[in-house]
Length: 262
Length: 320
Figure: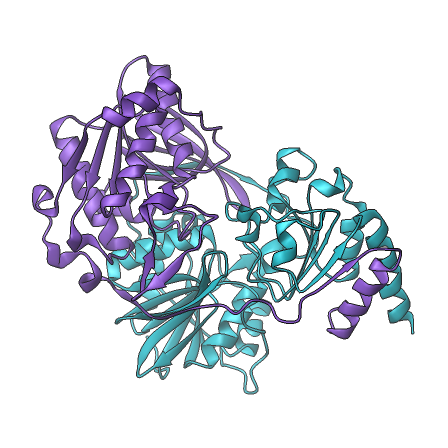
């Protein structure tokens, strides 16, 4: 069982995030791997453990700080880490990002075929959850997205996905791109031995040239969308907090009535 | 296909066979941008649905009668592509499934996509969508070059019927559906949550750890205000209430006119799913709960004291 997990560096959700010149400003010391990607790494580790053989690759794309995401995957137990780091990738939209990830996945796959690519359901800093679909389309592999359960065997994978109107069971031949929800599993904690090993582990660095991707086809220049304005929202004005000393409910009702909400 | 001037396509969202309210909001938004044309996937619409789409301004209802094949994102995308060749802008409701569909569509048409938008307008002939991001702490405006797809969040436009109804002429769309590698082998319908769907409710009353699993008061207030019942991750993890009720970044993102958080501390994942709500009210025992940082009106106290009194006071007000 050979599985590649795509992981994303995201800023610490508790930290301040901001926009500079239309892109997200973040610093290396306040971020790690997107929390929802932990479920993807966990799914991959469990499948390899159940199969009794196999390897897990962690792949990320981004600037120098993004290496923290694949290091976290190594701490959890991934065997190999790949970091696509090229200035020309900056400002890519989801389709550009998918094209770069797909090129890196093909490079791994062509050397020794993969069974699965597993991703988180969304990135907590952007949450568009479009990447898994874009990646499956770009690779022209099976798409099994929003998996709340996942079974792999006999050259195919089967998931159950919870949509608002129905629970769907979907099956498809391998190789497949699977995105997993946080309902699928409980991610493990890194153990001390793996944390120490992850520090020294080699992270393979690839540029767009290594992947045969034309820099003009990705990055801000090729993006179909451009942020033209970004501004912090003003804090809520005229905030009222009361302490209930027997009249809290009446105060609440009065507020709702005054606002025309009750 | 059509002679509509500047056709703005709107993908119709169905709820138990009827047109869902966010679709009527999207049609209202589309009227401010051009001539709305509704795109209908699945089984043939009934006369009531068509009439309602017309009432909200749809000049045409383009029907791709692909039945249950519409559950496959790639097939739905192919049908929409065939139905929207003449349109520079497609509006859909921002749901997980629609995000998959529009991603497939954009891969084939080259369109630019913004999802989870609060609104959209034309600026110098180009589409600009606006969103709130980072748990609603920033406003962002994004320009889409060329063909555009915008996923709009429910409750961001007030639905209103058109002054002059649209003709809602039925236009059958024929489409060659692509083969997919995936096979949907079972579809187990989920019993709809009673009342208004959470994502679309104009009022959401949510209960968290502070309820101790007792949702009677939360439900009573929600019913009184015509809203839906939500919950925090803590509460769904405890098994007090089903996952369908979870408000948060991995559950349902809500943007109601009024959000009432009862016994919810306001963890970052929860705030990310509700912070863009119109008015936020919080009731919590802990004066340091983060939810108080983002609320308009807060009561430090027990929900078991505050809610019954508030419910009675609202009832008394209405009786007058």
